[in-house]
Image (cartoon, rainbow, N blue to C red; front, side, top):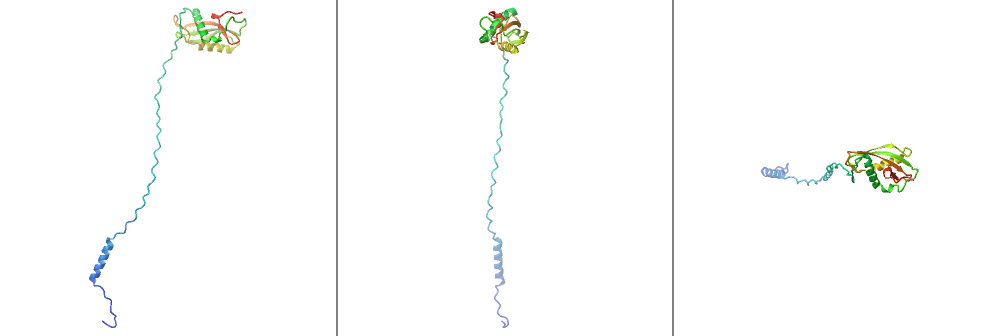
Length: 187
């Protein structure tokens, strides 16, 4: 070598150098980066349960009630309205025995009224009409009408299709009364 040039380092043979470069590249190319840590699994909260569905069970409508036919407690075999009047008065007395004035009525009464009552073939009251109303005591008039209607059904007039009977109400100031048909008289 030359004195002016120091000795150059020895280079590997090109063939060997290429081999090492090739092996390094192949190894670098085959190598895969380590797998990334798996992403944490984030579970969404479960959906809320569906709102309960209200089930409304409607019972079937009740069948309409059978028509009520009120049977009279007994029948009347009266052939005329005048005969029927006694049966009706007896029936009414039996319905309100605590309101019947016992004994002879005093000479001066609180009210006297004459009432016509229509009764159908089943003993039901279909109408009431005053022939002589005690207008000076409208509360008594209303009470007499209420009493007549509440006593239904009356005896069924079996020998007549229907009947209209008339009776006179003798009203005492205590609220007790007598019907002229069954009256014990006056003092």
